[in-house]
Length: 316
Image (tube, rainbow, N blue to C red; front, side):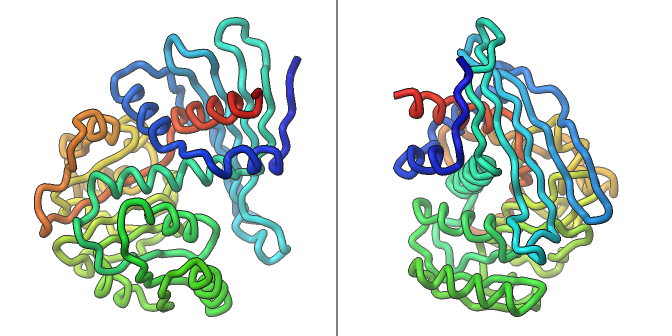
């Protein structure tokens, strides 16, 4: 019998769960070729602007397969609504029966995305983080920073945003969590102060230019998850010592690497997959002066792993 679980139920059981290991195992399975992940289904809307992604697949010899629908409508803030929504459908891999509907409203997508940022920082961030730079002031801009707490003791944050109201709300919320937050609408002020930077916006033109990036900087770019979006000057990827993606297949069609490949700023052979880095078990960064970039567009193994773990916990 199919069970339907609300956001409140999901949040109640996940409050004390750490999915990091499960997500890492998913990345490894993907890089090992043990996952069947079809191309992303996608709907792009112009008026109002938004997009819906359908990500789905399974890990071979696993118990489930998952179909995830996630939407982002960026004008919703003006309507007093969250910008993201969605759900996950969990099916038995043995019978094809729908076992549960996780009405998470995009929450689990946000969690698994924040965890991917944590994992990327674990292997790529500088040993000493002077300040954390954040582009964007929404839910993901908050979660990316808070999920980095396990990887760095740094509590200095410089946040860039498009409007003062969003910046002030961000500062208020993050200061209540113990962060010292500096707000700015000038991109240079972020890159000058920070050596660990996360970009979380739906921008379609670069927010960071190549000449802004200092040696020793790590950037995790997560906002650009379609072919149209772009947060980084693609020359940054050409300058970088290490460029990591969650999916070598997917980065050829969307995200920062796609833009850099299109502009001939990077050779595809330079790109490494996150699952391979995790499998090796050692930090990929070799020196404090290296520039590193993780371009994460999100892959279905993350959804499979988190949905499976949540379903198991809810069934107890």
